[in-house]
Image 1 (cartoon, one colour):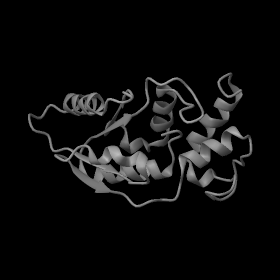
Image 2: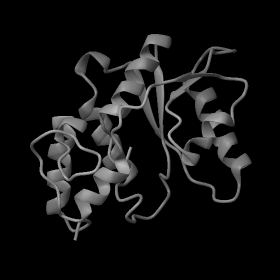
Image 3: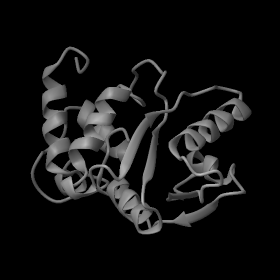
Image 4: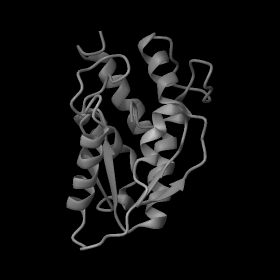
Length: 173
C-alpha cells in the first residue's frame, strides 16, 4: 500500500465478494521511513479510507501490522491475533485475498489453514509509482504505463491528491 492503488482496490472489492467484512492489515507499520516504505501507517490508512467508495464504509477495518525481521513466526502470530480480534465468531471463516507478484508475496503461503483467493495482476506497480514519484519525474495526468512516468489512472483521485499534498511536506524533501 505504498501507495494504495487501483490494483489494491480490486483486491479489497474481491474480498468483499467472499466476506461480509474485510480486515486490511497494513504491514511495515513500525518501520522508519525510507524509499521502500515512505509513508507512515496513518498516511496509508488515509490513502485507503479516502480511496474506498463510500458504500464500502463499515465493511472493512484497517489495522497496523509490524514487521518482525528474521522472525516469521512472530509475524504470523501477530497476523493470527489480529484476525482473531477482528471477529466475534468462535470459528470465523478466514480467507486471504491477494496477488502473488514475486518473492515478496511469499507470506500468502504462510497460512495453510486459510483459503487463498488469487486476484489477477492489474499491472499496476507501487514500486514503479514510488520511484517515479521520488524522482520528481511524474505526470499526474495521462494513462498508466509501468515503464513511464505517467500513472494517474493507476491511482484513485483521492490518493493522487494525498500524494500531491505529501509532496509539499517535509518528509518528501
